[in-house]
Amino acid sequence: MTQFNFGTIVASSKSGAGLASDLNAWRDALHSQHMGSATPTYKIAGLSWLNNVNIPWEDYIWDGNANILRGFIDPTTNRYSTAGNFAKSYASGGAVAHLSDWGTLFNMTGLAAQTVAIDPISTLLPGWWIRVVARNIAVTIDPYGAETLDGAINKLLPAGSSTTVFFDGTSLFTDQGGGGLTDFPIGGVVMVPGINPPGGFLRLNGGLISRVTYAGLWGFAQLSSNISTTDAAWTEGKFSPGDGSTTFRLPDLRGNFMRAWDNSRNLDPSRVIGSSQADGIETHAHTVDVTPGGAHAHSFTNGYTDSAGSHFHNVDQRNSNVGAGVIPVATSYDVNQISMPTNYAGAHTHVPHGTISTSATHDHAVTVGNNPGAANETRPKNIALLACIKY
Image (tube, rainbow, N blue to C red; front, top):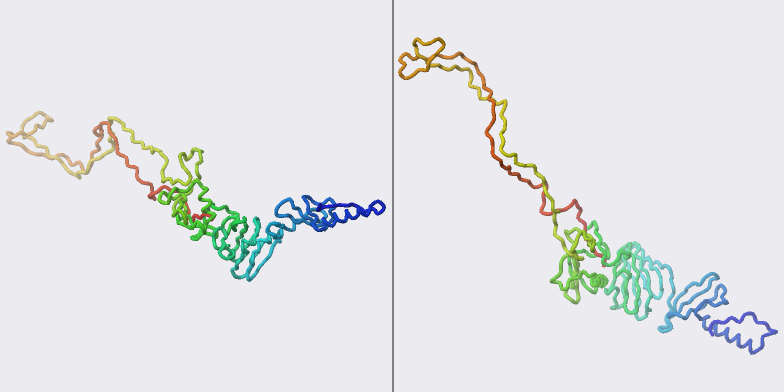
Protein backbone atom coordinates (compact mmCIF):
# COMPACT_ATOMS: atom_id res chain seq x y z
CA MET A 1 0.00 0.00 0.00
CA THR A 2 1.40 3.40 -0.94
CA GLN A 3 -1.39 5.58 0.42
CA PHE A 4 -2.43 5.03 4.00
CA ASN A 5 -4.48 6.86 6.62
CA PHE A 6 -4.27 5.34 10.09
CA GLY A 7 -6.41 8.07 11.63
CA THR A 8 -5.83 9.03 15.28
CA ILE A 9 -3.80 6.57 17.37
CA VAL A 10 -5.51 5.82 20.67
CA ALA A 11 -3.00 4.36 23.09
CA SER A 12 -5.60 2.63 25.23
CA SER A 13 -6.93 0.62 22.34
CA LYS A 14 -3.96 0.26 19.99
CA SER A 15 -1.79 -2.77 20.53
CA GLY A 16 1.90 -2.76 19.92
CA ALA A 17 1.52 -4.99 16.89
CA GLY A 18 -1.22 -2.75 15.50
CA LEU A 19 0.87 0.37 16.02
CA ALA A 20 3.82 -1.27 14.28
CA SER A 21 1.62 -2.18 11.32
CA ASP A 22 0.26 1.36 11.04
CA LEU A 23 3.71 2.91 11.24
CA ASN A 24 5.08 0.54 8.60
CA ALA A 25 2.18 1.39 6.25
CA TRP A 26 2.71 5.10 6.84
CA ARG A 27 6.42 4.65 6.19
CA ASP A 28 5.64 3.04 2.83
CA ALA A 29 3.28 5.89 1.92
CA LEU A 30 5.96 8.47 2.72
CA HIS A 31 8.68 6.56 0.89
CA SER A 32 6.50 6.22 -2.23
CA GLN A 33 5.49 9.91 -2.19
CA HIS A 34 1.89 8.90 -1.44
CA MET A 35 1.64 7.22 -4.84
CA GLY A 36 -1.81 6.27 -6.11
CA SER A 37 -4.53 6.85 -8.69
CA ALA A 38 -6.25 9.73 -6.87
CA THR A 39 -5.56 12.46 -4.34
CA PRO A 40 -5.04 10.90 -0.89
CA THR A 41 -8.13 11.16 1.33
CA TYR A 42 -5.96 12.45 4.19
CA LYS A 43 -4.60 15.36 2.15
CA ILE A 44 -3.71 18.66 3.81
CA ALA A 45 -2.20 21.79 2.26
CA GLY A 46 1.39 21.08 1.26
CA LEU A 47 0.96 17.33 0.74
CA SER A 48 2.93 15.96 -2.24
CA TRP A 49 1.68 12.89 -4.08
CA LEU A 50 2.24 11.00 -7.35
CA ASN A 51 -0.38 9.74 -9.77
CA ASN A 52 1.21 6.59 -11.20
CA VAL A 53 -1.71 5.49 -13.38
CA ASN A 54 -0.37 7.23 -16.51
CA ILE A 55 3.09 7.14 -18.04
CA PRO A 56 4.83 9.43 -17.36
CA TRP A 57 3.81 9.73 -13.73
CA GLU A 58 2.28 13.04 -12.63
CA ASP A 59 3.80 14.93 -9.71
CA TYR A 60 1.22 16.96 -7.72
CA ILE A 61 1.08 19.14 -4.63
CA TRP A 62 -2.20 19.87 -2.83
CA ASP A 63 -2.48 23.58 -2.04
CA GLY A 64 -5.54 23.23 0.17
CA ASN A 65 -8.00 23.81 -2.66
CA ALA A 66 -6.68 22.00 -5.75
CA ASN A 67 -3.91 19.80 -7.10
CA ILE A 68 -1.07 21.74 -8.72
CA LEU A 69 0.86 19.81 -11.37
CA ARG A 70 4.58 20.25 -10.79
CA GLY A 71 5.99 17.92 -13.44
CA PHE A 72 6.31 14.47 -14.96
CA ILE A 73 8.41 11.41 -14.16
CA ASP A 74 9.20 8.84 -16.83
CA PRO A 75 10.08 5.60 -15.01
CA THR A 76 11.37 4.10 -18.29
CA THR A 77 13.95 6.74 -19.19
CA ASN A 78 14.29 8.01 -15.61
CA ARG A 79 13.69 11.64 -16.57
CA TYR A 80 11.85 14.40 -14.78
CA SER A 81 10.05 17.16 -16.72
CA THR A 82 8.84 20.31 -15.06
CA ALA A 83 5.29 21.33 -15.91
CA GLY A 84 5.48 24.91 -17.07
CA ASN A 85 8.21 27.23 -16.00
CA PHE A 86 6.18 30.04 -17.50
CA ALA A 87 8.63 32.50 -19.10
CA LYS A 88 12.37 32.93 -19.37
CA SER A 89 13.60 36.11 -21.02
CA TYR A 90 16.95 36.35 -22.75
CA ALA A 91 18.15 39.78 -23.85
CA SER A 92 21.59 38.70 -25.03
CA GLY A 93 23.78 35.73 -25.68
CA GLY A 94 21.15 33.17 -26.54
CA ALA A 95 19.64 30.22 -24.75
CA VAL A 96 19.69 26.47 -24.55
CA ALA A 97 16.09 25.35 -24.99
CA HIS A 98 15.65 22.43 -22.66
CA LEU A 99 12.46 20.75 -23.76
CA SER A 100 12.51 19.16 -20.35
CA ASP A 101 11.43 22.64 -19.21
CA TRP A 102 8.01 21.57 -20.37
CA GLY A 103 5.76 24.51 -21.22
CA THR A 104 8.45 27.17 -20.88
CA LEU A 105 8.13 30.36 -22.89
CA PHE A 106 11.52 31.53 -24.19
CA ASN A 107 11.11 35.27 -24.69
CA MET A 108 13.98 36.45 -26.91
CA THR A 109 14.71 40.18 -26.90
CA GLY A 110 17.69 42.48 -27.33
CA LEU A 111 19.52 44.45 -29.97
CA ALA A 112 20.99 41.64 -32.08
CA ALA A 113 19.77 38.38 -33.57
CA GLN A 114 19.99 35.35 -31.28
CA THR A 115 20.12 31.59 -31.50
CA VAL A 116 18.19 29.08 -29.40
CA ALA A 117 19.88 25.67 -29.18
CA ILE A 118 17.88 22.44 -28.75
CA ASP A 119 19.01 19.55 -26.56
CA PRO A 120 19.93 16.24 -28.27
CA ILE A 121 16.79 14.25 -29.00
CA SER A 122 18.29 11.31 -27.13
CA THR A 123 17.69 13.26 -23.92
CA LEU A 124 14.09 14.21 -24.73
CA LEU A 125 10.79 12.54 -23.93
CA PRO A 126 7.83 12.33 -26.33
CA GLY A 127 5.42 15.20 -25.83
CA TRP A 128 7.91 17.68 -24.46
CA TRP A 129 7.56 21.17 -25.92
CA ILE A 130 8.56 24.80 -25.51
CA ARG A 131 7.43 28.11 -26.97
CA VAL A 132 9.96 30.47 -28.55
CA VAL A 133 9.05 34.13 -29.08
CA ALA A 134 11.17 36.36 -31.32
CA ARG A 135 10.06 39.50 -29.50
CA ASN A 136 11.83 42.22 -31.48
CA ILE A 137 14.76 40.42 -33.10
CA ALA A 138 15.29 37.55 -35.51
CA VAL A 139 15.85 34.22 -33.75
CA THR A 140 17.38 31.02 -35.15
CA ILE A 141 16.29 27.72 -33.56
CA ASP A 142 19.21 25.34 -33.97
CA PRO A 143 18.78 21.61 -33.22
CA TYR A 144 21.72 19.67 -31.82
CA GLY A 145 24.38 18.46 -34.26
CA ALA A 146 22.94 17.08 -37.49
CA GLU A 147 19.42 16.82 -36.08
CA THR A 148 16.65 18.71 -37.83
CA LEU A 149 13.56 20.78 -37.04
CA ASP A 150 10.65 20.41 -39.49
CA GLY A 151 13.12 18.48 -41.62
CA ALA A 152 15.48 21.47 -41.86
CA ILE A 153 18.84 22.03 -40.18
CA ASN A 154 17.48 25.12 -38.42
CA LYS A 155 14.51 27.44 -38.28
CA LEU A 156 14.55 31.23 -38.62
CA LEU A 157 11.88 33.23 -36.80
CA PRO A 158 11.46 36.78 -38.09
CA ALA A 159 11.19 39.53 -35.47
CA GLY A 160 7.68 39.70 -34.03
CA SER A 161 6.85 36.03 -34.63
CA SER A 162 6.76 32.89 -32.49
CA THR A 163 6.49 29.13 -32.73
CA THR A 164 6.09 26.04 -30.56
CA VAL A 165 8.77 23.34 -30.75
CA PHE A 166 7.77 19.82 -29.75
CA PHE A 167 9.25 16.33 -29.80
CA ASP A 168 7.10 13.40 -30.97
CA GLY A 169 9.51 10.71 -29.86
CA THR A 170 11.37 10.62 -33.18
CA SER A 171 11.74 14.14 -34.59
CA LEU A 172 11.45 17.79 -33.70
CA PHE A 173 8.60 19.81 -35.19
CA THR A 174 7.06 23.24 -34.89
CA ASP A 175 3.33 23.79 -34.56
CA GLN A 176 2.96 25.12 -38.10
CA GLY A 177 6.03 23.70 -39.77
CA GLY A 178 7.44 27.16 -40.37
CA GLY A 179 8.52 30.41 -38.82
CA GLY A 180 6.37 33.50 -38.51
CA LEU A 181 2.60 33.83 -38.31
CA THR A 182 2.37 30.40 -36.74
CA ASP A 183 -1.40 30.60 -36.31
CA PHE A 184 -1.74 30.61 -40.10
CA PRO A 185 -2.19 27.09 -41.54
CA ILE A 186 0.39 25.44 -43.77
CA GLY A 187 -0.77 25.71 -47.39
CA GLY A 188 -2.77 28.88 -46.75
CA VAL A 189 -2.50 31.60 -49.41
CA VAL A 190 -2.21 35.35 -48.79
CA MET A 191 -1.80 38.39 -51.04
CA VAL A 192 0.77 40.91 -49.79
CA PRO A 193 1.53 44.46 -51.02
CA GLY A 194 5.27 43.95 -51.46
CA ILE A 195 7.83 42.34 -53.73
CA ASN A 196 9.07 39.90 -51.06
CA PRO A 197 7.03 37.35 -49.05
CA PRO A 198 6.80 37.65 -45.25
CA GLY A 199 8.61 35.17 -43.00
CA GLY A 200 7.29 31.63 -43.27
CA PHE A 201 5.85 32.20 -46.76
CA LEU A 202 6.98 31.47 -50.33
CA ARG A 203 6.09 33.11 -53.63
CA LEU A 204 3.51 31.16 -55.63
CA ASN A 205 5.64 31.29 -58.76
CA GLY A 206 5.67 27.65 -59.90
CA GLY A 207 9.17 27.10 -58.51
CA LEU A 208 10.78 23.79 -57.56
CA ILE A 209 11.56 23.57 -53.83
CA SER A 210 13.08 21.01 -51.45
CA ARG A 211 10.89 18.33 -49.89
CA VAL A 212 13.21 18.31 -46.86
CA THR A 213 13.48 22.04 -46.27
CA TYR A 214 9.73 22.51 -46.72
CA ALA A 215 8.59 19.17 -45.29
CA GLY A 216 5.38 20.61 -43.83
CA LEU A 217 4.27 22.08 -47.16
CA TRP A 218 5.23 18.88 -49.00
CA GLY A 219 3.00 16.97 -46.58
CA PHE A 220 0.15 19.38 -47.33
CA ALA A 221 0.69 18.99 -51.09
CA GLN A 222 0.49 15.20 -50.84
CA LEU A 223 -2.86 15.42 -49.03
CA SER A 224 -4.29 18.24 -51.16
CA SER A 225 -5.79 16.12 -53.98
CA ASN A 226 -4.25 18.81 -56.19
CA ILE A 227 -0.92 17.34 -57.23
CA SER A 228 -0.12 16.27 -60.79
CA THR A 229 1.04 12.73 -61.53
CA THR A 230 4.36 13.96 -62.96
CA ASP A 231 6.17 17.25 -63.28
CA ALA A 232 5.63 17.11 -67.05
CA ALA A 233 1.85 16.99 -66.45
CA TRP A 234 1.94 19.99 -64.09
CA THR A 235 -0.42 22.92 -64.73
CA GLU A 236 -0.21 26.32 -63.05
CA GLY A 237 -2.93 25.72 -60.46
CA LYS A 238 -1.41 22.50 -59.09
CA PHE A 239 1.52 21.10 -57.13
CA SER A 240 3.80 18.60 -58.85
CA PRO A 241 6.02 15.79 -57.53
CA GLY A 242 9.07 17.59 -58.95
CA ASP A 243 11.97 15.26 -59.61
CA GLY A 244 10.12 12.46 -57.83
CA SER A 245 12.45 12.23 -54.84
CA THR A 246 13.92 15.48 -53.47
CA THR A 247 11.81 18.33 -54.87
CA PHE A 248 8.24 19.36 -55.60
CA ARG A 249 6.73 22.22 -57.57
CA LEU A 250 4.48 25.04 -56.33
CA PRO A 251 1.40 26.40 -58.10
CA ASP A 252 1.93 29.58 -60.14
CA LEU A 253 -0.60 32.35 -59.46
CA ARG A 254 1.33 35.14 -61.17
CA GLY A 255 -0.96 37.36 -63.28
CA ASN A 256 -4.08 35.33 -62.42
CA PHE A 257 -7.22 36.12 -60.44
CA MET A 258 -8.32 33.57 -57.85
CA ARG A 259 -11.83 32.09 -57.91
CA ALA A 260 -13.43 29.95 -55.20
CA TRP A 261 -13.81 26.33 -56.29
CA ASP A 262 -17.45 25.64 -57.23
CA ASN A 263 -17.48 22.35 -55.29
CA SER A 264 -20.84 21.15 -56.74
CA ARG A 265 -22.70 24.45 -56.33
CA ASN A 266 -23.10 24.58 -60.13
CA LEU A 267 -22.33 28.28 -60.63
CA ASP A 268 -19.02 27.32 -62.25
CA PRO A 269 -19.70 23.64 -63.07
CA SER A 270 -17.39 20.88 -64.23
CA ARG A 271 -14.33 22.40 -62.57
CA VAL A 272 -11.74 20.50 -60.52
CA ILE A 273 -9.57 22.00 -57.81
CA GLY A 274 -6.55 23.80 -59.21
CA SER A 275 -7.87 23.92 -62.78
CA SER A 276 -7.16 26.96 -64.99
CA GLN A 277 -9.88 28.86 -66.80
CA ALA A 278 -9.43 31.21 -69.77
CA ASP A 279 -10.93 34.68 -69.75
CA GLY A 280 -14.34 35.13 -71.34
CA ILE A 281 -17.35 37.39 -71.83
CA GLU A 282 -20.88 36.26 -71.01
CA THR A 283 -23.03 35.56 -74.10
CA HIS A 284 -25.09 38.65 -74.90
CA ALA A 285 -26.57 40.72 -77.76
CA HIS A 286 -26.42 44.36 -78.87
CA THR A 287 -29.62 46.03 -80.15
CA VAL A 288 -29.28 48.27 -83.27
CA ASP A 289 -32.43 49.82 -84.83
CA VAL A 290 -31.95 49.50 -88.61
CA THR A 291 -35.32 47.94 -89.59
CA PRO A 292 -35.98 48.34 -93.37
CA GLY A 293 -38.90 50.68 -94.25
CA GLY A 294 -39.95 49.14 -97.63
CA ALA A 295 -40.39 51.20 -100.83
CA HIS A 296 -40.68 54.86 -99.90
CA ALA A 297 -39.98 58.43 -100.97
CA HIS A 298 -38.36 61.32 -99.24
CA SER A 299 -40.15 64.71 -99.48
CA PHE A 300 -38.18 67.70 -100.68
CA THR A 301 -39.22 71.21 -99.56
CA ASN A 302 -37.74 74.64 -99.17
CA GLY A 303 -34.97 74.02 -101.65
CA TYR A 304 -33.52 76.72 -103.92
CA THR A 305 -31.61 77.14 -107.15
CA ASP A 306 -28.43 79.07 -107.65
CA SER A 307 -28.90 82.79 -108.37
CA ALA A 308 -28.24 83.82 -112.02
CA GLY A 309 -27.92 87.52 -111.19
CA SER A 310 -29.80 90.34 -112.95
CA HIS A 311 -30.55 89.40 -116.60
CA PHE A 312 -33.08 89.44 -119.44
CA HIS A 313 -34.18 86.93 -122.04
CA ASN A 314 -34.41 87.63 -125.85
CA VAL A 315 -37.58 86.72 -127.69
CA ASP A 316 -37.39 86.20 -131.47
CA GLN A 317 -40.33 87.49 -133.58
CA ARG A 318 -41.27 88.23 -137.21
CA ASN A 319 -42.21 91.74 -138.34
CA SER A 320 -45.57 91.01 -140.00
CA ASN A 321 -49.21 91.62 -139.49
CA VAL A 322 -50.46 89.11 -137.00
CA GLY A 323 -53.33 88.92 -134.61
CA ALA A 324 -53.10 91.12 -131.57
CA GLY A 325 -51.18 89.64 -128.67
CA VAL A 326 -49.61 86.82 -130.70
CA ILE A 327 -45.90 86.57 -131.24
CA PRO A 328 -45.26 83.65 -133.52
CA VAL A 329 -42.05 81.70 -133.23
CA ALA A 330 -39.56 82.58 -135.93
CA THR A 331 -38.84 80.00 -138.55
CA SER A 332 -36.03 79.59 -140.99
CA TYR A 333 -38.04 81.14 -143.80
CA ASP A 334 -38.93 84.29 -141.84
CA VAL A 335 -36.90 86.98 -143.61
CA ASN A 336 -37.89 89.83 -141.36
CA GLN A 337 -37.02 88.12 -138.04
CA ILE A 338 -36.03 90.36 -135.12
CA SER A 339 -35.11 89.80 -131.43
CA MET A 340 -36.55 91.81 -128.55
CA PRO A 341 -35.50 91.64 -124.87
CA THR A 342 -37.82 90.96 -121.95
CA ASN A 343 -37.87 93.19 -118.91
CA TYR A 344 -35.06 92.87 -116.35
CA ALA A 345 -36.12 90.64 -113.45
CA GLY A 346 -33.23 91.48 -111.11
CA ALA A 347 -31.14 88.94 -109.19
CA HIS A 348 -33.37 86.13 -107.94
CA THR A 349 -33.68 82.42 -107.22
CA HIS A 350 -36.44 79.93 -107.87
CA VAL A 351 -37.76 77.69 -105.04
CA PRO A 352 -38.46 74.15 -106.23
CA HIS A 353 -41.06 71.90 -104.62
CA GLY A 354 -41.69 68.19 -105.02
CA THR A 355 -40.33 64.74 -104.07
CA ILE A 356 -37.23 62.79 -104.88
CA SER A 357 -37.37 59.41 -106.52
CA THR A 358 -38.45 56.43 -104.42
CA SER A 359 -36.09 53.65 -103.28
CA ALA A 360 -36.92 49.95 -103.18
CA THR A 361 -36.73 47.96 -99.89
CA HIS A 362 -33.10 47.96 -98.72
CA ASP A 363 -30.79 47.58 -95.70
CA HIS A 364 -28.21 49.93 -94.22
CA ALA A 365 -24.85 48.45 -93.07
CA VAL A 366 -24.02 49.08 -89.34
CA THR A 367 -20.53 48.77 -87.82
CA VAL A 368 -20.16 48.39 -83.99
CA GLY A 369 -16.68 49.61 -83.07
CA ASN A 370 -14.44 48.66 -80.11
CA ASN A 371 -15.11 50.32 -76.79
CA PRO A 372 -12.65 53.05 -75.76
CA GLY A 373 -9.64 51.63 -73.91
CA ALA A 374 -10.10 48.13 -75.37
CA ALA A 375 -7.45 45.58 -74.21
CA ASN A 376 -6.37 42.07 -75.11
CA GLU A 377 -8.20 40.56 -72.11
CA THR A 378 -11.36 41.01 -70.04
CA ARG A 379 -10.63 42.21 -66.51
CA PRO A 380 -12.05 44.32 -63.67
CA LYS A 381 -10.22 47.28 -62.18
CA ASN A 382 -7.48 45.77 -60.02
CA ILE A 383 -4.27 46.19 -58.01
CA ALA A 384 -1.23 43.92 -58.41
CA LEU A 385 -0.23 42.07 -55.20
CA LEU A 386 2.21 39.24 -54.46
CA ALA A 387 0.62 35.79 -54.02
CA CYS A 388 2.31 33.77 -51.22
CA ILE A 389 1.80 30.37 -49.59
CA LYS A 390 2.53 29.34 -45.98
CA TYR A 391 5.12 26.60 -45.52
